[in-house]
Image (tube, rainbow, N blue to C red; front, side):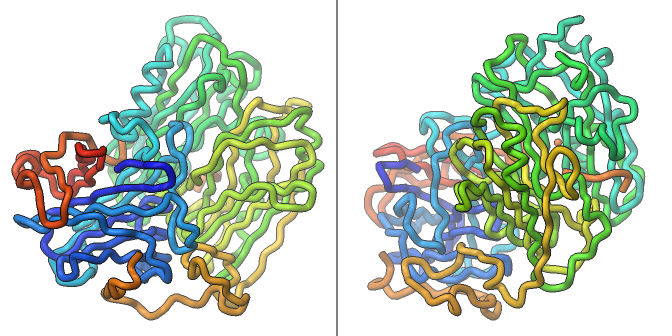
Length: 562
């Protein structure tokens, strides 16, 4: 791919004879994806489509992709296309600057088949996380780039992992793993307390990966009496969290989490949630977290603000059947109490479970919504902790917060994967405390901050307030802003060429995506022409699906192995 001004150029290639599709995915899977497809039956036209939470591909009202060239030869499909980074179409996903590793990457998907028209792909699919705005000469995958940067800027790392913990044959298990400074200091060379965490990466036992639901990492005073509620619960400071779909975390060069430098952070507590719905026995897990650190204190201390219901104050409260909305509001008195100066929010993560369908985290300033972080089509299986793509921004004293979770099926607020949570996380700096308490606004209201909660049953999909999937570039009346999903669609036809312009609660390193870069043996300039057979080098690498990255007259292949 390449980005020129406001234009995005991409070429995609597959070993197929019927069709190929490339998607810009919200969470990394089909739900909320913006897709473009090419068929050999109609090789002069691309189809711009989108997918909501019913897995059906629908044709956009506005066709925003333009086909530049295509090749159909020797069992390969190669198509080169272009569109605007921001089409202004709510049936498209906007491509945002993803260069900084501490921010969210872009997520892309692909599918292909040998049928004449686009149909169910089966195993013919692939996905990856990429940095579209990064240096195009880099050959690193997302996980490799993260690890390279952590190695470059850190003085070392230490691990906190399970010791062959046997996962019980029960659906939900919360395992607490705690290590004190005295237990860890040998890993960083002695009695120094000049340890600042600059990033973290998951360590996941491959054999038990399917059971690891998420990790939550907290700095605590000690490894004694740290579970349960009371004052200790409010003094646990979250410093990292992992859920499937994430490669790890890195902080900007001037920001870090100080460790072991006060009475409040003398130990590391990791909460690991195991999900074992089939109640399989005999599985041993040694998962945990690797902490990358520097011995030089950084300019700013980082902290995590938690909103919504991080303490699971609604534990046991039923969620009604059908579509429901659950809203948590933290008033401006809380930020006024903690913030004696503006603080910078680096990123946000939105956490629900399997019945979650949309989530929004809003900052309200002066009675108006100042900032919105949202996931339009939540997909727990892809990203249990969804990180929206956004620029850093500042919070001020007096700002209030509104965290809203939408669910599509009846269940109960609780810890299990089939049960529900609603938590918004904000990573910010510099860290702020009041009377020893971190900046924190849970439900129900407790000193020093209090949240209000209200739930609403929704009569139809319009109540979700979802913008993605509504017809773009067309002004609609309120009563037609969103309609119920159409009946299942088994295939899509292209438009005519004239139109185609349970112990406790709460929210693991092997990279989730295996990818690498190599040279592209093919350079295309005109439809139907290729300078070299694209099969030769690809077959020797046993490649099943790949993305072609257009760089002027040259090309590089971003390969995803199957």
